[in-house]
Length: 75
Image (cartoon, rainbow, N blue to C red; front, side, top):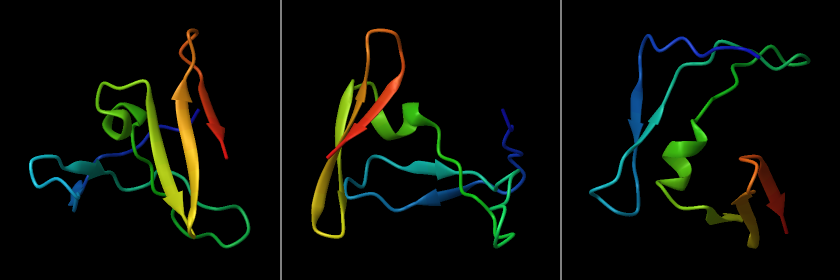
């Protein structure tokens, strides 16, 4: 598993002004394009919840944490 090197953390805007998400600079790059991969800790996305909805290109995807602590992404 690759680790993230947090040399220049940035704060991404949030819909809720009281919540900010830290986006760390990547320690990995896409294999084909050699462009950086952004890493976000799942705990920051979930903010203590076990489920969230991600909107992507007009569709909704559900990200859930299982009883075993694994992640499932469903449409």
